[in-house]
Length: 290
Ligand code: HXC
Image 1: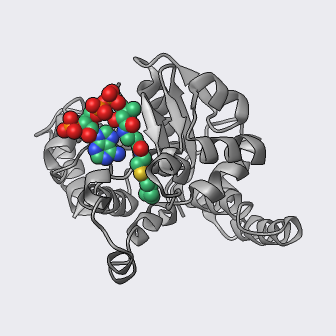
Image 2: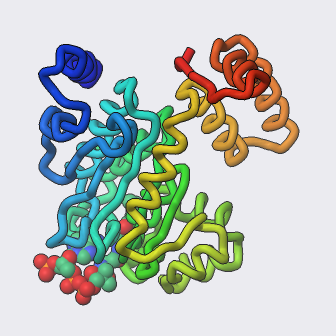
């Protein structure tokens, strides 16, 4: 569907029906969702943009919202114009966790028979890089959603926490596994066992996020980075993302072996040849994603 939209868009541009600056076309053509807003930003709509949109519930992550996110990510993955995706919330909350009201009366049997939370994993399987731009609360499932992304940027008002312990449960979407890998055991243990939150500066210091900027500019910063990533070969970016993520799943020796195979594999692509030839010829590379 999005491929078709892109082709149509290009056709209209060529025929002069649309001027190049009429980027609203992208917004109008994108699917509408109940719990998220979806757009395309950046030059030629190269950045897929998802805004969590349940402001009254501080963007708490009900099942329907996660399904919307998965569907939007699927569409961006198939969209040849999109090279990177940004997920954000609003200035008060990225997401204040899984929806407690939805979980309140669930039983153990409901969890098992309904594969509760299994659909969240899909977010980590997308081939395109995803940047979380976090303002305000990123708590529980909100913090876990951010950690499922590839890069996290934080607005100066961001607060990260895993407060599940205060609700008589534990993180269930990777919080006990990803957080210690990202911030180390002591801080992760403290956050998970006390429910204490950390602010943006502490998150930066601990390595949970790679940039802090004002809450007004952080989304633009994320879009700028996404645009820069999108200028590279999408094929090679996907390989690089897979290589880095493998570091979290395997031993150093196995990871290095896997990396070497992928590195050798890039020599089977036209983009690797183009990148090196462009360097030698002192011109910008013209990647074709092949
Ligand atoms: C459902 C939520 C919610 C949540 C907030 N709301 N967080 N609804 N699930 N996780 C709702 C409130 O009920 C309220 O709606 C509205 O959002 C505004 O929240 P307030 O509490 O009035 O706002 P404030 O006083 O500013 O406090 C903000 C807050 C607090 C500190 C973030 O809302 C809070 O502690 N929320 C819960 C955070 C949490 O425990 N998260 C982990 C969830 S468990 P109404 O209509 O009632 O006024 C989890 C498990 C993960 O994530 C497992 C794997 C995914």
